[in-house]
Length: 417
Image (cartoon, rainbow, N blue to C red; front, side, top):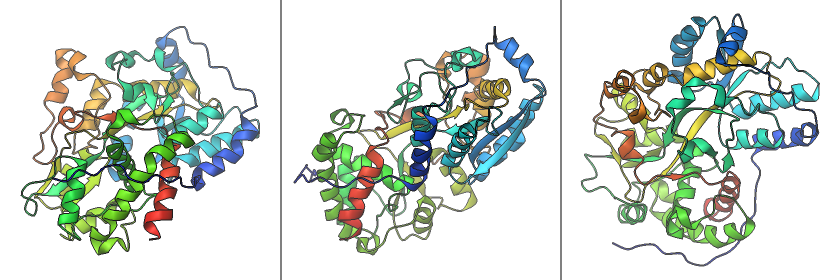
């Protein structure tokens, strides 16, 4: 089997994503402003007392139907038992929540309308630069003791140290899947996948960046071409980009003619990719949410012959978090909800594919037998193996500045070929 090697090296232009650019414009206006000091609570019981009667506005991506249902029908009723009203505020981009925070801070509002945000990656990093997130509060959450303090996915968010500024909520693992009726011997590494695509023209493609899934695939190609995740620094620099990106871009240029429609067009997003897969136009797909594959198969959105395709060198993983703005009106309630969301009961419920199917951030082996059994009793899937198997040899995300730079290089050299 041919192994693809790094080739010529050239530097590409950089690009700032529009949603982040809006936040960056506000960043300069807000970064120099005063940051509200965190409330002083003697212990978590004092937090729960202060949270009584509060209404917590949770701003989160509204396009995930299972996620919306979980919050509305499971997490919100559990919060109600604590005397807290949890109100879900759907947004199309979590940068909208951060921009609201920055606008309200610029206007001098200390009773902000955003109490809690489902966040990770660039929105968290931009908020940290603007001093928009409350920090030092997660150590007060009793359920943080169920997490592994040495877990790199929980201590680092796309290259930005968490430092107690957001509480973990669930994990994700980039995963490839294939049609077992069409592919008898699936590839076992990314170089083998590229070889397979070239040997089976038209049967593979990926979403076009800046789609999130497509952007991840670009980074995985770059990491593979560099010889592994350890060869590329997490922090972006022009020098590192010039060293590592050209081999990935050239590999993708050479791959393009073997893609679906000869690379003349790319699926707009993961859903469009899944539709091609379900229509049997392609044989291999990819996702950053493998836990949802079971539900997609059960609903008929993917064929019953769908199976996960582990990579021997591993794939990238990350975690999602809950962050509290510095000017949140109901901070105590937000802290209580974040702790509730970390409880073994809620984490196991959320991990059920029939509920939401999100991988837990808890150290399951460290739980007591009763809580551990919650996870052991979750239904198994013929499609998706355990998180332990999926995350074997996993590596952490690169710093976010790698994303727009590599996306722009792809647009300049691959999409315009």
